[in-house]
Image (cartoon, rainbow, N blue to C red; front, top):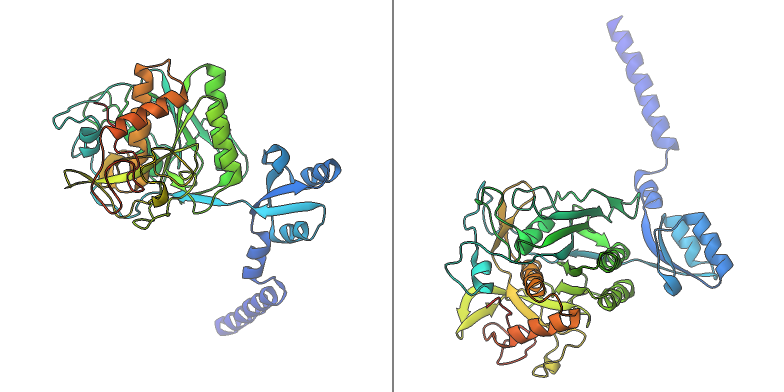
Length: 417
């Protein structure tokens, strides 16, 4: 009887499996059909636009450029074939950090004021840092995790990356680590026990804006929305805002370009990573390559020709504009420590990683510190001050670095002193 029961059960199981495989849609085809695609839709007239919004919903509205939303593959193809719409996929941005860790995590930092802090303060014996009072730094990244050295800095925590909603207030959790690392370099304050690590401007307030998912990628429309949101928040509150972006893409997004220009018009300072595609010329990414953003190259803790050296991985700008001391599209503006940088990590400890992602928050923190000391400066004045400090500290080391304004280090390395 047991043998008979086993045979019948096996036969029924095989029949069931055959039925599923015979009548179900192949998994690959089904996944492809259901795949969500972020698109920008621009309609030929108001009626067509309203119909599309009704059918697909609206994630972000961008005026004459149209609106973004999520559609599946079949819907995307149908829109492409509809003469009433211009539709394109929204570009993605990724992290501007070297993915390989170059150090170990630990309960306490190996150095409370790592080499980047010593360099930007021009003080090898510095024990703590200070400054940044009443300045907001919006870190647009993978979010920021809870950390003892950042606990006193949080003022806003918002998630722009979720598919179900374009903005979720009160959450910005970081399971990647990148955003937490960046935030620490800007404004870590050593913690209430003073045993932790210090950033450039520990008295600044943190606006943690999660625009990248935990894999380190995000849509340009979400980034554009976060940029505009930070600018609007600063304007509404009457406070000075530094927008720090350690992310990038190889091609320009018109949505982000417009958002950066808008942020500048609202009085914010935008700082962005140059990218990690060096050492060849014209490898700078976006939004760093925009004229409205301060593009930051990465320095390593190595002396060459009497100065720090631009890291080989650091993206370079346009050599045709060397020496003009004017910022144009695709120009590196300044440089800062970006190789083997220790900072806060998402697990509550510390980690050492490299990239122009790590250089950018040094400059964002410096901007916050300088602005706090000179609150009457406009964003244009502040940018000019950073350029002046960089010019006074020329970088001569690394491929493409030369005396004066160059395509590798920009104007130079701006410092506190």
